[in-house]
Length: 448
Image (cartoon, rainbow, N blue to C red; front, side):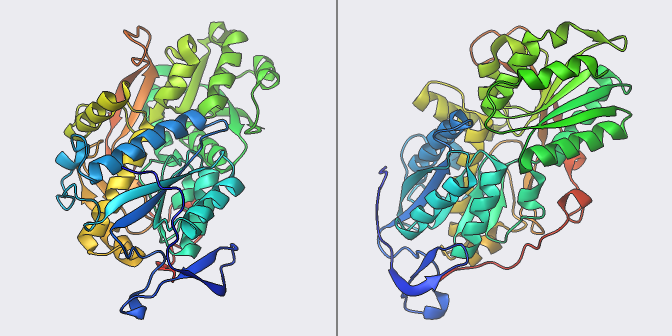
């Protein structure tokens, strides 16, 4: 495995610039009609891994990068093969992709859209990346997905939970394996009703960008539909580290549930502040005060420590699942890195394999061939059971997990317990659902 820093692919054509300011390489092939951006011409193919290595989501990004590197090893026939052994598609043989050794370059999104676009642009333009994977922010995902659409490369999204990614901002060259905010609401609502009742008053603190907005919208809709009242919704800057000033007003709001639409370090800090204010020790409206974290990760739970105990939320995947794909990935990741993988790591690992498999099944790296191979693709063996990539919007549908902070953890990684595995059918929705309205998928762009 090699992590290549700079490799030129093709020749930059003078004046060929997209509206995003990306100069596109002109690729000359035997058939110019079949030309596409960064077509591999030698014995290797380069993938671009664009993750937050700094910033509030850096811990998630670093775990994603570990998983991406593991995926490259498995594709190249190194290690134990991981999910290549359990994936129901048998196109991958451990000899790279279409016989070409897989190499990769990396970028730091910094959890900033502009920085993420710049790093993706560099990997495509200077390093010859034919696919971009990663990210731990929906703002980043939407920005990079748009760039990849214009550049003519495939974007296999990493951790992105906003409805917009496969809603109003969906693109033909982009695919999402992660679940979304609507699915969190659909999975959580029945469990919240059962455990907390249908007569509750909720106060939302929400990260002020597209993920937070659609997460808030989804949870408000699902909880109000079961009888809850929304007392207030307050937006908080993504760069915030101290949420004390946002927690204090909750004490006099009449709310008996706090919903933290925060992720990563933001959630760790806001939950810690809420505990410091003694919210979970309060009795309001005759009920014990509760906190809900709609989107969980193992890394967040570990960072929050004792404060996470008993707090409900949802997850895309968890290392404790017992399906064969999960067990294979956890074994490979654990033996290499000495810890279980996070759900963001699993998503990036799966996305790299899914891209490679699509190339093999299509018999080409041409983005349009890859899109055709992925649209409507049904498979199993990568975790969460039977899975579908819907052709209408490139959203992945699979079972969703409801989890709770473990009250009696037995080790450092036993932070969350699975409360319910929500069947795929319960979280599915029509492609024209109002929360996903606007925007067109459009057509695949092969670029050059």
